[in-house]
Length: 462
Image 1 (cartoon, helix red, strand yellow):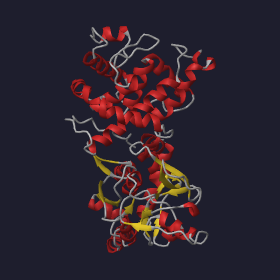
Image 2 (cartoon, one colour; image 1 turned 180 degrees about the vertical axis):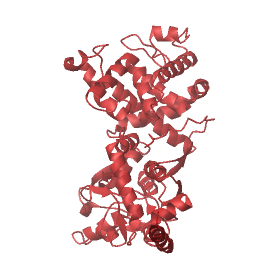
Image 3 (cartoon, one colour; image 1 turned 60 degrees about the horizontal axis):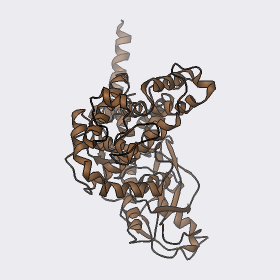
Image 4 (cartoon, one colour; image 1 turned 45 degrees about the horizontal axis):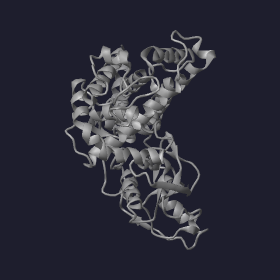
């Protein structure tokens, strides 16, 4: 290489050394992505197995994509999130933020990853308001939220509308409505759907706006490096199905709310579960599983009734067939301890059959489907999923194909033939809901057992 070429390279190096590093370069040099968020079941919180939540999982995947560590910071008040983001004190905000014109004046929003609808929430037993003009009581919303922005705008049409802006979280205000400390609040549809499982009397009265997009917020400025990296990241997780899978993981099982069933379940948790809790803990410990998941299976199978029997001859707490009980070494299916132990062992055998490459939580959801319908039928559904160009290792795709096993056009293509494919889908989704409620009750110290940790459900790596 000639002297001139070497001199040019040297000049370029000197020039580049004189330029400050971009935000993306700073993140990578410091090996840390700093994200501001808020506490809540749809965003970020500390669970029994460590940090979790939709926004936490999404930003953790982004940090992995950048090859850096993730640090989540939670300010004292929701109202602090956007100002701190605008100042550049954090790299981005991931807090279930809806895009509004007012907010776009302060921050820059990244790609849309989900959509929600803001809803007025009241408690059943009181009169349902049909419009904002019908409100008769205290309305409180989170200060600085998009809900407050909507109310300010709607006040032009409803001049008598009054409310209080509070520094509480959305979850706290929903709890206040449930406890009848206030009459109304406004919540996003996804947050209400999650919290209704814990507070069944909460109900949506009406939408206060049309559907709205959610996105991360970035500081405004000329440096687009981190923003552009986020665009590439979201394009990737959309194409490879990771985003759909994450949405399904957190929201896929909570679409249809059953008030009577939820209330009955909560009552049975108080009255029936204490009789068998230690049995679930012991049996789950033998297979290194969260006892709450095993208890959720037991409730789906029998409502924790050790004498339960179905028209097809399955019996006991975990509804084992005679052959399954024999294979698991169970002599008396009506003995609750034996039935629970047999159910745990049977689930363990299903988990062992699931290919090692399949990650959690799909591994558990697929094993539960096999527990209900049989491993052969599950494999048939996975093959149909593959034929239809779905991901046969993902529950979100397989559950769409399980119902096809009851249609002649499809089950004639399978090895094991006809099966009632809708049943395992409902079976798995119900168990997921029962499990979520038990986790919430134990973490709220409403029921306090000695709980062995469940191996952390990891999202599929990019």
